Length: 331
Image (cartoon, rainbow, N blue to C red; front, side):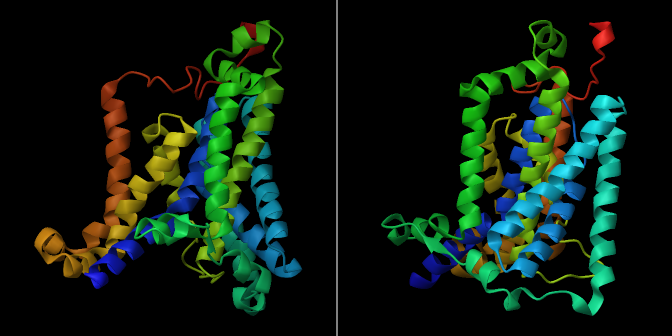
């Protein structure tokens, strides 16, 4: 029974550990979409934050410097998106895809350019310590749930804190309520003196910065091991966009959404172990092809998007002006 309990604990632990970057990406995208901007550049933005945050953290032997650099580098991607879509009125869909292409290209350009000079995370004590589990007193000693939920590195707790603060900001602050007004009806918000461009710029930059923190997390989770053919982000940016819909544009529900998507993502690694530990209830997992488990997160993403399209109506949390450029002259 202890062996079965250990397998279950590790399974739940890794659902949180491996998939917390989705929470960063989702919360960042929620902030940008609440401003009425549909940014499809999450994947590229996270990649930029990942590589520059990691390199800065290694160069300075500082977790905080890595976090700040990741936020700033990804924030610049958000600033570029804002310049093109808010000031120059470019198409948001095309611009977002361009940001993704640019971000991934920059990621590989920098990584391959460094070649043998690429820094190893094991040589950077601050990053190793920063990704070491910090146990929450009392709660971490609970059976199963203690290890799974309350024994993680500081970036896990930071991600949950940011999600909670974003929810509070959007619902209980004057600035957050004005932001929601900008996303719902920018003309009405403009008519009462809200600076539409300023709100969009600030939240596009801040939201993109949060995405960059998720990319930095993934860099540390991959132990800083750069591969010339695979990006650390590995499609998480696209899943984060779907999670925004799944969470109904609610940062707190994004925490739950991360766990749901994380469940399917982690299942591909632990399916065999779970089937062996619980043969009566989960033995059937061994009969499924491993390729199916690898495809599950993306299949679930497609199902969410299809289900949303079939409804043919806006969800109660979706900003009414999402994806629409605001022309003040047409107010």
